[in-house]
Every structure is written in structure tokens, then in C-alpha cells.
Image (cartoon, rainbow over the protein chains, first blue to last red):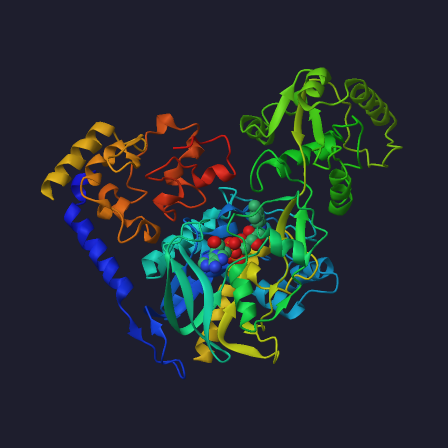
Length: 502
Length: 122
Ligand SMILES: Cc1cc2nc3c(=O)[nH]c(=O)nc-3n(C[C@H](O)[C@H](O)[C@H](O)COP(=O)(O)OP(=O)(O)OC[C@H]3O[C@@H](n4cnc5c(N)ncnc54)[C@H](O)[C@@H]3O)c2cc1C
């Protein structure tokens, strides 16, 4: 393999890189003539998730040269690890299924209910109207969706969610990246934007830590890049920034892990705020009660619990008793789960278990057991031993539960019993603890994607924001499959704005 | 320079192509990968431009080894077919070498953040 690459070529490469670093172009911005720019580009996009990549690809197709800066050592942020659900009203599978009465307006209706009065109907409408173009952009780039698959997901009144064949948003991210590369988008990893350089209300460039190796803040070195046509902040949410998270929502327990990629720390949003960008709804942070402490990210837990909530029960390991109506809503379940604590206050992760023999060969089970976030036990005794549960009480709980199933009545929590079954060993067991999942809040933009100035409440100049980094769009609750839509859709809007602003 | 290319070629052939080289003590009191031994004779500049902290990206790796998709992996060593980090459904070619590999110490690959049982620290 080495014969294809010569050492000389390598040395030459380094020389060129070094020269690139030291070239200082004179700054030409008004009143900023003292700035020594290390580099000048046209459009600068920060972040390589759905939002950043869609803006990048659509901009280059509109004739705007683009540079994408990504701080991590991989592309894609949350988008690359997401669950791959994408809401597309009037997608071809939906139509083939005979669902012909859907529309962008129908989707927005659902979103506005979830938003509980705090959503931005006009913005949601603009985004929903771009769902089909966004879906087609994916198809054109070679993205593979699950064949003939379109289902109704939580909070939607219609089956309109398609899903990636690979089961993750990475299926889109990798293909858009390929398309962008071949069409001339200049992508750079390990470029962390630390600050914005302003000329009054206009953003004229950024300060970047180049060669950054997450999470070591001392790595790399600072360069100044001038952005002639504008800067698009597409840096995602901030759920991994524990300090910020606890400032904006003190009710979020610090014991809560997070589904997000480790770089979701929000520093670019904070930097934009120091230059006058208006943040909204920062305290609206979505959590899911379906997390597992025994895996990272979103993991298999949610899919496994789609069995457990219906066919099993949730038990507090310190008492051996049930804790809730397992089919209740997110808030009810989260509260009951988080009440399970050891004496020192640390989490006593509740156990959810169901009958192994009823689900033999189900991939939701086999992969969970394989990856050691769920376990199989031949008896309650072995389960009690592993998780230190009082055995007598655990046995009593199961016996009582089985009588509830026979009576089709749950006097303890009034659970709907139509899907409940009697429990008998062997069991499949997993542990649950809620995870922080999504930031509804972020920078306020106008309908064209321009960042709003906190002092004037008017758009700032050449400063755009896209995707989860923006706020005030989804109100109190973002519906599932709609973040994928948002990020991809805004990429069709912002290039037009940039052209209009030029 | 030619001598170095030659030594590297031999080292690569001997190390095989499947996994990153083992860590070993290098002459400057620093650890490094056995298959990179020759690079250490030539000061740190073979990979680093300027100070180590300023190291820019993985172009040094790529110039000898090729890009992520070009490097063949011994698939029989993978825990399962999906656990092929050079063909990740999340990143594919959009991953820097440094996301999973380190030269002077062992490193947990980026994928193990979620897939905790799929990969060994290398
Ligand atoms: C596990 C998981 C599953 C999900 N499942 C779904 C689903 O099935 N359907 C759905 O619609 N939504 C889902 N979501 C939500 C959705 O994936 C995200 O909201 C969406 O991907 C956000 O896209 P984005 O482009 O705005 O941000 P991201 O994809 O997070 O991209 C932001 C990028 O910016 C980079 N960045 C941040 N700061 C800087 C900086 N200072 N300098 C340079 N770069 C920076 C980050 O490293 C990151 O790569 C899920 C989320 C998670 C975490």
C-alpha cells in the first residue's frame, strides 16, 4: 500500500499546508483594516450535520462557493448518529399506501399541537413545504430508505415518517458528504469556531481553532477566516454542556445522561449571543424516559422497551415493587423512574423485564443482549442476585402482577391491560434512566434564516442559523422525525436568502 | 529519503494490513507504533509540523496509508460485520484517522462511545 504514496509527496504536502497557515491576507472590511486574515472564503458554514450539509450542497448548486468547518474528528454531529426517522408529507410510499389526504399543512397542525402555543407556525410551514424537495435531494444523492416503509410515529395524525435503510441519519450524512465533495464543497474537520468577527451588526469572519482535537481545548491554533458572503451557524444543540444545561433548566437532574454526540456543547451559540444574537426558549429541553445507563447515545433501549412497556413491568431494585403505569406518558414515567434512588441519592436504575420465550429471535432482544445492555435470566432469583433486589418482594410483585393480568385490571397504577401478559421465567431484563435528547431553544431567526439581533430585533447582516441551533420553531415539543426534516429543509431556504442579501 | 520509504514499505509488509501497529518505546522516551519506527529517526517532523499541540490533521497518515476507504481491514477480526469502522453507516469516509487511532498512546475508537462492546482500545 505504501508504493502508491511517496514520502516526497508527503513532505511536499506538509510544506504546502505550512505555507497556507502563514499566508496573511490583508483585511478589506470597512473599519476592520487592522485585521490580519489567515484565509478568505465565500460562504462559511459551521457544522456538518443535516443543516450544515444541506445548506452547503444547496449553496454550491446555487453557485455560491462553500467551506464547511466541523470541530470534531468525524462529520455529522447528532445527525450522523440519529435514528433515521424523517417526516415527509406526500412521500411516494405514503401515497402508494393510499394515504392521500396528507399535506405540509396537516403536519404543521400536529406540530402546533405539540408546541403548546409556543411554536412558529409560519416557519414550520416553510420547512414542511420543503419536505419533498429535501427527500428528493436525498434520493438523488443515493440515500437508501427502507423499502415500502412509511409509518405513523408519536404525535403525528398520519403515517408520514420514512426511515433510513441503515436505521440512522448517517445514511443521509454520508451521502450528502459524498455529493458535496464531488461538487466542490470544501469540508474541514477539526476546525472549531470559537468566536465571530463583527463589523458592527455584520459578521465578517470567524476565529477558528484549527487542528483541534476534541476534547483537548489546548490543541490546534487560532486562525482568522474571513467570510465574504456570510456565516451560517449550524452547530446543533447544547445538551452536553452541563453548566449551560443546568443554568437554563435547573430541573434537569445532573444524573441524566444524554443521547447526543459529545460535541453538542453550544459554544458557538454562546459566542453569537455575545455579539448580539437573540436566544429564545433555551430552557425547553426534551428528555426521553426510555434511556439505558448501560449503553451510550440513543442505543437499543427505546426499541427494546417497546416490548417491555407492553409485555413487562418496571420495578424499583431497592424495593422490588412496581413503580408506575408502564404505558403512561413521558413525564409520568420520567418522574417515577427518577424517584428510584439509593440512600446516598445515586440512581437506582429501575429494571424492566418480560418473558424471553415470547420474543425468541426478535432482533430488538438479540442485539440488546449481544451488546450487554440487556440480560437473560432463568429465574427471578438470579435476576435479584445480579441487581441486588429483595427476592421475596420481587416474587410477590410478579405473583400479584399475574393476578392483575388475569383480572385485566391494574389497581395499583390503572394501566391499560389489553397488551399485558403473565410473567414467567426465563426473563429479558434491562435497566432504564431518562436521557436528555433535544434542544428546542437556540438562536432566533427570521423566516429566511437570518439571525435576529437582541437589541434591534431586526436581522443581523450576513449571519444565518439553521437546524437545532435555532430556537422558537417547535415550541414546547419537537415531534419525532421533524428535526431531520428541519435541518434538510432549511438548506433550500438559506441559499436564496444569501443571494437576496448580496 | 528513499531509504526511509524503503524501510517503511518493509515495515508495512511485515506488520500486515489488518490492525494498527503495537505500541513500543521509541528512542526519545516516547511511545510509538512499531511499524512507524523508521519515522522516529528523522525527528518529529515526519508527522508534526511545528509543535505537537499544533498538529493539524491526519494528512500525515493518509499520505502513506491512503484514505479510510482504501485501507483494507481484516474482516475476520471484526466482532460482527456492522462493526467495520472503515465502512461505518454513520461516517463512512467522513472520519479522521485520529477519531479512532492515536500514535503515542492507546485510544478508544469514537464508535465505542455508543457501541461499548464492539471495539477494543487500540
Ligand atoms: C440519538 C439521536 C436520535 C435522533 N433521532 C431522530 C430521528 O430519528 N428523527 C429526527 O428527525 N430527529 C432525530 N434526532 C434529532 C436530530 O437528529 C437532530 O436534531 C439533528 O440531527 C440536528 O441537526 P443539526 O444539523 O442542526 O445539528 P448536528 O447534526 O448536531 O450538527 C452540528 C454540528 O456542528 C458541529 N459544531 C458544534 N459546535 C461547533 C463549533 N464551535 N465549531 C465547529 N463545529 C461545531 C458539531 O460537532 C456537529 O457536527 C435524534 C437525535 C439524537 C441525538
